[in-house]
Image 1 (cartoon, helix red, strand yellow):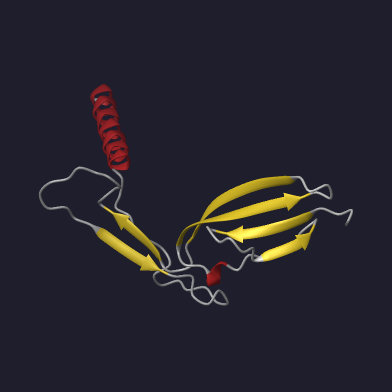
Image 2: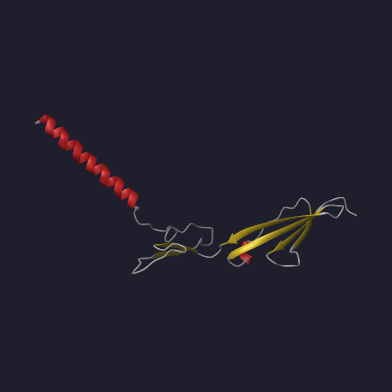
Length: 135
């Protein structure tokens, strides 16, 4: 019997481990071999006496192009015509940075418009009051 703990690694609902290593374990998980979506990494550790410890780590893989949507949110109740903007962009080959299509454009938020209008209104009020005192 070994005096070292072992670690078994399972992906999703697989019954056969993709790795069986002595502890401590250092490895790289290649997500390029996984489909995009939700996955779970199940880790079972066994100590020399045979006792087991289990840890399940859920994670999401997104190797494909990212999709950004503006104008429609999850589970939103809508009616009529809805303007929607969709942008899809990938990471490229990760050896060079792609500028075109790497950022999603957004509309100007309403709070920013309200702030600008309030500031301009305050400026006009200040000018009118200052001119009235001079005259």
